[in-house]
Length: 424
Length: 109
Image 1 (cartoon, rainbow over the protein chains, first blue to last red):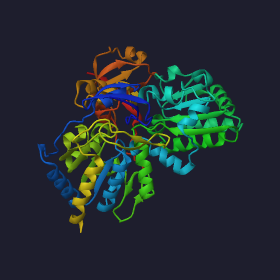
Image 2 (cartoon, each protein chain N blue to C red):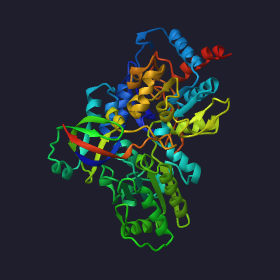
Image 3 (cartoon, chains in turn brown, yellow):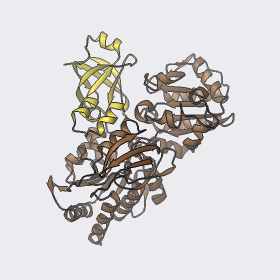
Image 4 (tube, rainbow over the protein chains, first blue to last red):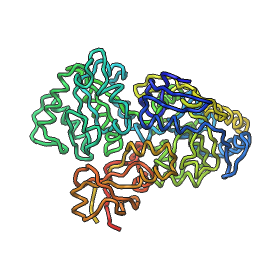
C-alpha cells in the first residue's frame, strides 16, 4: 500500500510530501525523504517491547505503578524532553508537572532557548516557510548548516525552491552563509562571510551601524572586512523579501540570547527599507510544538517550575542542565529525548544517581542509566498526533503501521491517574 | 600540546547514525573523532587516523584525528558522548552550556 503526503517527524522542516510504502504492516520503501527521514521510517521500532524496571522486564501496570511511586515520593522531580513527541503528549506531560509541582523543560533549553529569550526582549519579525518559498529573494543562513542538519530545507522551502515570485528557484535568489568555518552549505552560497568564533555580536552590531550610515574607523570586524559588510547591507536594503535563518552558531556561542536579540534588532530595523524576517532553524520534529504547548498551557515556553502551585519561569534556574548539574532534581522523567547523549557530563551523570524514568521508542543512552524504561510508539510512524513546523505551522502526523506499543499520551494519562491518589 | 578553539555541532553522519542506535559502531564512529585543519595538522606533525587527546577546562576525550576544512586554530567534535565530556555545565543563567567557542588543547598520545 502506498501512502502519500506523509509528514516526516524527524526535524523542524516536517516535510509533508513523503511517500511511504507499507506491506504486511511493515514499511518497505520511503521516497522523497532525506537520509535522516529515511533512517527514521525504516528503523522505527514498532514491535512489541516490554517495559523494564531495574533492568528486568515487567508488565505495564507494574511499570506504571513504580513510575508513579517514584514521582509521588520525589520532592523536586524534573520532566524533560518533549521535542520528539506529539503536542497531545506534551499537554499531558505539562498536566503531570502541574500535579507534581515539578520542573518541566524541553530540549529547547540546549538548542534555541537563547532564541526565545532574545525574542522575549525584541519581538519576532517572521513569516511562514510558504512565504519564504514564494517571495524571498535574499536568504541569509547565519550559524547554521542546513545541508547537514535540515537536508531538504534548501529544496523545499528556501535556496532551490520554485515559488510564485521565484519561478527560477536558485537563480531568483541570492544565498549568503555566515559561519566560523566553511561548510557544505557555505559551498552552495553566493556569498560566504567567515566570522571569527565568538564575534557574531560585533558583526551584527556593525551591520546595524552601517544600515544607519554611521562612519566606522575600522576596516575589519570579527574577521570580516567592512567592505564585505557594506556590500551585505546594500543587498539587504534592496531585496524584495529578506530572511535570516539562524542556528546553534548564534545561540551556543558566547553572548547567546544577546546575539539573537542583536540579530532581531537588525532585522526589525531593515523593515524601514524593505520587508525582512527571521526564523530559527528548529532541530527536533516538534520542538517548536513544545514551546507552543508550554506557552499555551503555562504562559512560558520552557524552564517552567510548578513548586509553588503556579507556573514560574526562569532560565538558568529551572532549565534541565542547571537543575541536574546543581544536584537539585531528585527524580527525572525523560520523554522522547536523550540527555545522556547530549548534556555536559556533569549534568548527565546526575541522571544515573537519581531514579530516572524514560519514555521513548528507542533504548537510548539515557535508558541505559534509567530505573524504569517505558517503550512507546513513534509519532508519525505508529501513532498519529500533531507537530509544529519550525515556522510554527501545526501539521498532522500520520499513523502508518499498527504497533502494540502505547503512545506517550496514553502512558502519561495512566501515570497521572496512578499518581493523583498518592498525592492527596 | 597546542591551543585551539573547540566547536561542537551536528554532522549528517551523526544524524543518520542515530537511527542505527547510540550503541552501534556507526554512532561511535560518527561521534568519536576530532577534525583539524591541514595547516594545524602539519604543524603538529599529526596524521589522519591517529589517536589524540583533546582537553578543555571541563574534561578530556581520546579521539581519532581527521582532517577537515577548518580555519587555523579551530577544532571540531561532533555532538555526542565525547563532546559532552569536553563541555562544562555552566549556563550563565540561560540554560544553555557553552557548546561552541571553548578553549581546548590537543595532545599527541
